Image 1 (cartoon, one colour):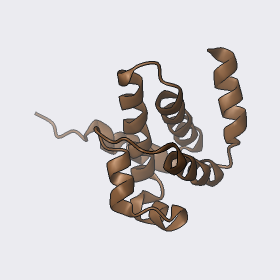
Image 2 (cartoon, helix red, strand yellow):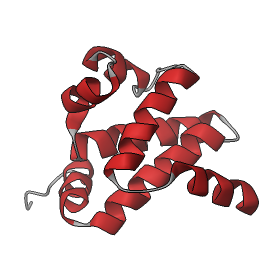
Image 3 (cartoon, one colour):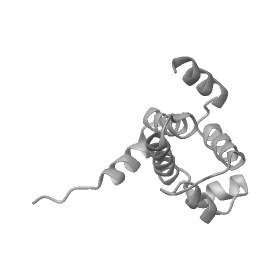
Image 4 (spheres, helix red, strand yellow):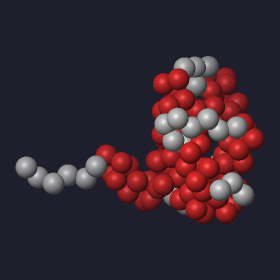
Length: 114
């Protein structure tokens, strides 16, 4: 049986080299987490944002940029995480700035599509 890479490793590798894919990971995670209609959407959003963070700046750097402890950030995006809106706002402002994306435009577009 051939040795294969895990799905997560493949996603992280692609995110490191493909800007459009990385931006879509962030936007998709954001929309599912913030505008999700059910628990499954929120789970998908947290998981996607966790993968995005791991593939880009990492939790330690994100902690430095947000002022939120790295372990708290990891908990926020864990399967049972329950982040406050304030902390999510801090995190997403940093992540969207890193990708040079306008969070307000993304939200308006998502709301118009819903």
